[in-house]
Image (cartoon, rainbow, N blue to C red; front, side, top):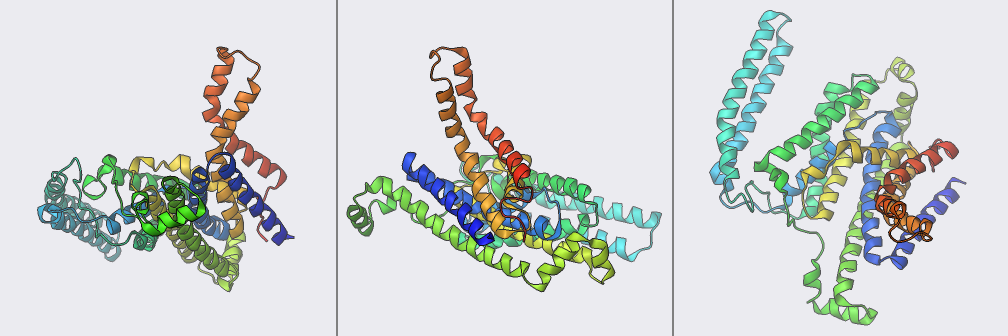
Length: 433
């Protein structure tokens, strides 16, 4: 019965995407498909944390932003003169900050509690801050002064951008380990507040550290793992293919590029899904669900609950970081201001809830359903408003207001979908088995 339900729901989603291709355009349909694939991977990461272990993480956008940072650092070419102007100074400043933090931690661990320890830790932090700023500040200013209109940052290593996907996962995993060591001992509501706050800190750093990400000036013109449309339009084999299919080379080049992206994203989704399913059905997966359902009993049986929570928190964040790097690859630019924690974190959580938390296939389905209607709610809303007001005069104020309000249909649509699913299928479209 579960297999039949899977087949039915995914068939309906395929038909909806085909319908968009037939009635709107295949470019729009394929664009939605690619974003659905990335959303599904991100929902899988959240499902690993919430569905496997019951960890309520609302710092999703922070980990996705780290994936975007990885794409810049790996794929963008190094800026000429930036390293000699202040690159090594910036790295040295970060190293000094790391040493200061390490000394403070060692002092805290090695000395007994008391006024002497507190004074010493404060002294280490204050002295370390001023030494770090004396090295780090001038170096970053020198980097940002190099052709600020076009660069003004260090750049990256100029490697293939696909390599940034696992690197984005590693960045997010390291950040999750640090965050988890601090927050996983907290109660679930405090964990949510802490992860949201840390996510805001990560995004604020990306917005304001111009030497690393150009800040609000954005990093544009990123390399692509697929051909550029303009290059395809002058390539003989592509022109022959277009002629064989009877397609216009200019329009078909855009469709072909989106199909190439879709092939890459489908491959990554299948790999992550297979790994997630294998983990869920293993003894480790059964142990995680036992901890989720009853921490007290699991702890009494000798399971280190905090350690396992840290483990699954890191794994889920790695998947989110991977998806974040893929999203930046698809966009072709890093835009730190586009990472809006409350808005898009809400969407990812709705994907997991609607699809069915604890079920990997449900997370994938939720990613497709929610992102499809998030994009299509506006044009469908405009059609609905035009149909409702078809009998009104063109200058009718109510008609003009309703048509102008069609853009807000997506928020109402998300709420309506969530309410309907929670009413008729409280455990999601594909509930946990």
